[in-house]
Length: 269
Image 1 (cartoon, rainbow, N blue to C red):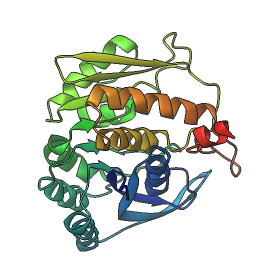
Image 2 (image 1 turned 135 degrees about the vertical axis):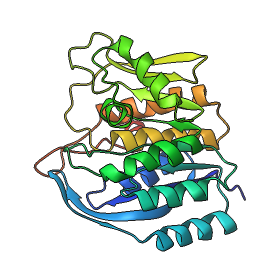
Image 3 (image 1 turned 90 degrees about the horizontal axis):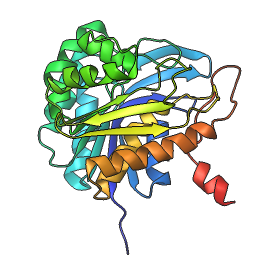
């Protein structure tokens, strides 16, 4: 009996199913791993935005984490929405005892512009969470929020990566999807550990249904790391998966629809 690699997501719930824990678990399944979850917050959200958010107590987060890690074990961990300094510090402390690779998606703002991280939590992200990361995956808004570096063009991404690496993650994956839509290089991301550099490029798809992109990329990266990929291999595979999911993003509700986590399965049929 074959047990698939086990991947744990520590993140918030998205009731609309496009991002958060729901996106993470769908991605992990699509990439052949067993997804497990530690819920940090419950949100009421849909295609139009976030209508409400309720954070779970630190003791509930700690108990979920211990239950999974102590009994089942993990080959990789991914973190997403950790809305307060208390939760960030709790999760960072838990991650310190884990030997598996950790992907930190420093979620700050939702696709609709809703704040998902208290300003008081930023210092905890910088000082406690990023040092625990094997790979940190900020988008350009999150880079600005954490470091003050504003990326206007591709050349600025090196400076952004250097600023993130100063906080201690082994690798930084700077997501350039928010570069101006007319950017000639398509959708470009920069992966670097400060020594080697990998530029990940994909065509930019003219599709507004992009909800869950960041969660999906970080989860795909964690799933591939759990399967034994190196960080550059995992990042390239995750980029390919997300590009396909973006291209297949679909309408849902009256606003921004989700990427399609099952695009490979649907393509095969």
